[in-house]
Image (cartoon, rainbow, N blue to C red):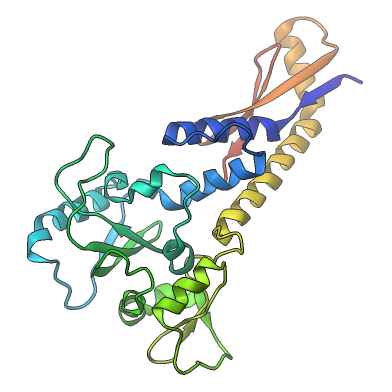
Length: 291
């Protein structure tokens, strides 16, 4: 039997370290592999992937007069699929920063402006634009002051204008509490890593539309994404083992000689995963990287 060497998990972590470096926040020396996974998926969640999206406005919405031009540019960029990174928080440069409003309510906040500063972000001014972002749409909640991370008014706009967008998170069989937790209590709960049901004025209850928060303050979906990709990596290793007899013939035909062993490395190109055999360079396409 021919020897087979592969460690796709190590290759995966190497890839993630490189991606975090490209984002501008390389992992510190000694950062564990698990922590690297969490850092990467935390950045992915916060950094909106460029793609065309429909921008939905709530009834009666009007931007502040001094932000009308900047808001129109934001809509044009979002609709065209232009990167929205310049509008996001500078906290994006810190892969270890946990956005509690995003993790709990699924709300991004945007800084509108016309002057891009040296770090690639718009100069900060005025109120923030709060919105829920999905793969297809941006649901504008309105302009709110900096620090309105637990302002129920943000979610009341979503609930009133696009309740179907929250249907997946709706809770049934639960009794609303009176009074509902104050914004200050919600902030305290988030800081403690606690999940509190979102209660609307009409008594409707939702679980966290942002996926939820762990006691470590991470987004729950950040952890689940890391676990899901970990399992995917192990499946890729098994796929190569299963296909080794066929690959052996292809590789030895390419090399025109017998080999005593095979060493594979996992690499990524254009959203696809490949297993590359070290000696021959033969590549096996393993399929798309899960989103």
